[in-house]
Image 1 (cartoon, one colour):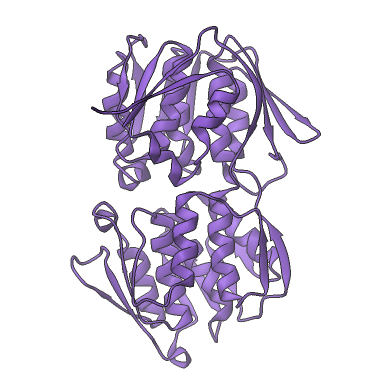
Image 2 (tube, one colour):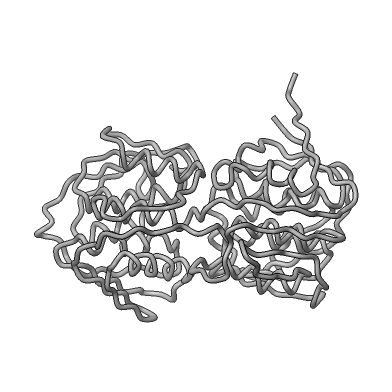
Length: 410
């Protein structure tokens, strides 16, 4: 299936709903399970990834298949160790190609028993209950890999008999996601000590509390892109707040450079088309990898001479996102090229001619390219991929003035 998106006058008006933060919800679900129900959660996301995690936590089955939900794979690996549950944790074909060895090695160093059932370093995994009295309370892990490995260790630390001291052996990437985990744990009554190269979390109990998941800034980034590309846009993003621990609030600073004005009003934040700043920009996505596709496509749309770094983790996401971006941008006459180790630039001017966008089973590919419909009709293959994080995305686009037609194969 595919959809064709068009927009007749490049003017956007309306009020849209954002999903609650998948990053917050997935962490809160793990913390609730570890607290044995003491934590109550308001505004749980209806994203597919979050539903998969909820179902896994509620399941009594031996084998848990989490499909393509990468966060669930990492968080559940640590959770089942801490909970003392015997589980076989598997996923989609792509999930079984995504490395998890660094997290497994760290959990084994602590004393947990985990087996690889196929390829060393990759799912599926067998997690075997372990005597907690024999666990170590210190572990070292590289900080320049997936922050979800570190968050997974952090969240189980309070329920381990000796707590856990985590030492980073390298500089830390994606620090905002680690800070988010720390903030949510503190909200749940957990005391922890953090420094540039160390996190110490003593053994302790969670307190009964109700926690609220905020609207998702990663999802908000697509509306920022639309406001930047449109001739005139005024879009109200309901329930969104600048007062957040989500790292992707960084989009505000970047979008302002690219032609978006922000105003906090009674029920959220209004994004408007403004005046673009510099025509030459550099963006470092080390701490904000989920914004990369949005910003890179936006720069291409506005013919901005931009360079990009911090893209290394994009190779092991739902797809190889660098390759996917290169393939799809080339359809518009734009090249994303690596000019030296780890640094990329855009060349060429974007041209529209009814392009068809492949999504590579990646929700962010679909949503990052959708704003280009402001420049001319585009077709998106497999649009249902957005259900992973933002099930209502296409409906919300129609609210502000886009026309969307389903193309059903004959």
